[in-house]
Structures are given as C-alpha cells and as structure tokens.
Amino acid sequence: MFFHCFKYGFLEAVRQKEIVFWVVIFPIILGLLFKVAFGSVTEKTKFDTIEVAVVVSDENEMFKSVMDGLSEGDEALFKTSYCEEKKALELLENKDVAGVIYGDELEVTVSQSGIEQTIIKQFIVEYKANVSVISDTIKTNPQKLSEVTEMMNSELKANNEVKLIDGDYDPMVSYFYNLIAMTALFGAYMGIFIPIRNQANISQLGARKSCSPIKKSVAISASLCSAIFVQTICMIICVSYLRFVLGIDFGDKLIMVYITAIFSGWVGVALGFFVGSIGKMGEAAKIGLYTAVSLFLCFLSGLMVMNMKQNLEKIGLGWFNKINPAAVISDAFYCLNVYDDYEVYTTKIITMAITIVIFAVLGFIMTRKRKFKSL
View (tube, rainbow, N blue to C red):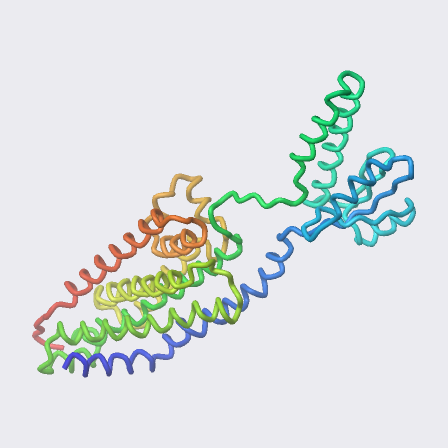
C-alpha cells in the first residue's frame, strides 16, 4: 500500500503546474538572467596584462630594460608600446592603453581611475625608490651594489597570484548559491500539498482519504517520500543546468555540491510540510504566505543584494543568518568552494538536518489522526 500511495503521490506532484514552474522553469530563467547580467562583470574583474605606452629617450636605457623585463612571458605585468608623446596621448585618449609613462621624468598620465592605473602609479613609486637606493649605495657603499640589486630582483614579482583563502572564489557565484537555495525552498510547494490532500477539514480530497482504510501515517509518509524524490530530481536538474549549461564554476567538489543541493531540497519539503499542516487556511492562502516568506528569507541571504548577510552582521542580527534556511544553504556551498576542511560546512549540514527533523516532526504531529463531527 505504501508504494501505491508513493506512485500516486509522485504523479500528483509532477502534474502540479505551480511546482513545475517554481522549482524547474523559474530557476532556469533566473539563472540565465544572472549569467547575462553578471557574466561580463566577472570577466572585467579578472586581472589581465596592462596596456601601457612609454615615452622614453635613449638616455634612460635602465628604465627601458626594466619595462622590457616586465613585459615578457605569459604572465607579464605590462604590454609596453614605445612611442612619441603625441602618439602615446592619442592611444590614451582612444583607451588603447591604461596610462602613459614618461621614462625621463618618471611621471604617469592617465585618463581615468581604476585598478590598472593604480598599479602603474605604484610601480613608478617603487621604481623611483629602488633607483634612489641604488644611487645612494653607489655613493656610500659601492661594494654592496650587487647584493642590493640581487635582493631587489628576488623581491620583484610582476604578476604573482597570492591566495587569500584556501579555495577559488568568484563573489558573483554567491548569487547562484542563493538561486539554488531558493530552488530548494520552493520545493516546499510539494510539502504544502501533502497535509492539504490528507486533512479532512481542509480539502474534499482529504475528506475522502480520511474515509479510506489506508492508515493516515502510511499515506502521509508515502506522499512525503514521493515529494522528497521529486525534489531530489529537481535539485539535480538545477545544479546540472548551472554547471554544464551556464558554465558556473562550483569548484572541484562537484559531487559534494550535488549532495548539498539534494539535502537542501529536503529542507524545503520539510518546511512546506509544516506550513501545509498549520491551521485551516486554503491551499492558495498557504502558498501565497509561504512564497512571500521564502522570498524574504532569500533576500536576506543575498539573492537580490550580495552583501545582505554582512549588513545583518553590522546591525547585530548576525544570529539570524545562522537560522535562516536560505542563508544556511548558500553558506554551505560557499564553504565547499572556499575552505579545504569541512568544519564549517559540517556545522551548516547539521543545522539543515535539525531543521528537517524539527519541521517534519511538527508536521506529523499536526496532521495526526483526527475525528470530526461533520465536514
């Protein structure tokens, strides 16, 4: 009898248009919009070789040799164009170069502010400092000149990657983490239908089921398992679409990403099961209420504004991030991508497990067998 109820629970879930839209179609559309909106931003934030024009005479060969050294290799800091001042300013005006360096005066001209312009200016500041050290060494202690130049060469890193965190992380990926969290929470729609379809005082179908010989606990358990099964499929589709169609980089722990997404989908089903068992509100009212609350939770986790969780920390509401299901789910993906160990990730998974157990138990308690004088 359990598998009979499971089968029809599955068919009932996949035939619900609301479920198909919110759990499958809507995340696909929103994910595509995120990719279009943030894809170019991500590309612009990646460091590339800086185009620079240098106006230098033959009298400053040392500076020219330094620029040549910084312009060599696949990871060169600069791509240098040597030209006269008129041509250099023309390149700058056309934005073909980020800045113009006057090699004789060691001055920089730029047309706008940005990371590349700051790097050029900082390079000139350090170059001037190094030239001053060398000049002073020649005057005061020439025998240490080779030692000083060797030390400067060892410290010079033209384009060296320094890892501030254990993993690779693109800030824009947090929007896609929150998109997965939203998809997981929208799985609650399948959970909401379970009590409504089994409560005699809420729906006509519930009244008919209450008259059937099937134990209510069996019927609800089968429906809950079918909802979890459908939500698992939906979460796999969501992650696969983001990773292999949109090309979102979730790091090198993709299997764990799938597992986390599936587990987070169960959180959504449990929440929906609890909401569906509350009171005598109709199906539309419960769906509307849950949609508003879940979108608000996703907003606070950073779905619409990336730094919302940080803003909550600043105003003393950091504790809410620890209990907000959307924030906990998105943080779990963040931990997978950024940290090498699983300490923080385990905390998030335990929080999700506790959420599932609490709301599933509360849902079972509120949908327990009841008797009615009339329906």
